[in-house]
Length: 309
Image (tube, rainbow, N blue to C red; front, side):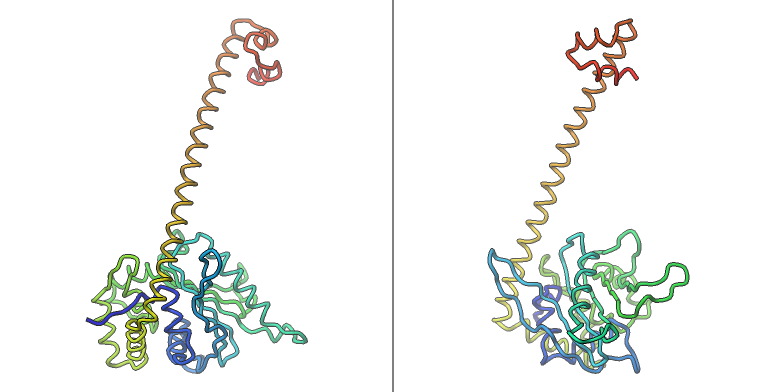
């Protein structure tokens, strides 16, 4: 049986789509995801960052994204993220702002800034309450008439978990877009669950018979998956991500416990205050003056008067 490593792991994603020797696959992938056809198609890309994972101090590792310039003068950044950090919209906006501002060199005018496109491939819903679509696209538009502020900003969010829901439910009945085979590749293997979806792989092999780009992608994916050097780096990256997830879950659990404890203390405090209020009002109803109640309870007279209002 053929062996494939999980392309949702950023190390593997960058190996397949972030290397100059495989830029024809990157170009095909981008055209599919951006729905580019005809004269709008990207013909060529040049990579800006081809380095792979490196360990830094305290076990930290660098972000692994795919950053390219296209022959159409666009700058495109692709990031794959399998751990929900709960701040992805702000992160995407921040990374876009950095890339966009860094594209202007000394002596250039603002008109020379390139369209900058961010593609976030996630394994969780980014807007779970707003939509059940797996691919959402964002621009800045005027609220009422919907015209663009600028075509230089474009965000794509792709939710692989929602894609799998659609694929399992509608794959026989729905008209597929060109991105489907690529998203199937990204969804076929789950390293965290140690599962491989054989149905997806079989369907990809059928598609590969008639689509050269898909066939080449499968061949390269298999080669990268059996490389001993790649497997070692892959396992190290997977271990690091598992540690990150464990730490994140631990922090959230601790936060929930702290919140529960604070809530309990606040409840007890409120309960005591309610009892104090009832006692003061009962004593007042018996005809006692605020000063006398303060003397008997040890409270400040101002506090007693507060409960009598």
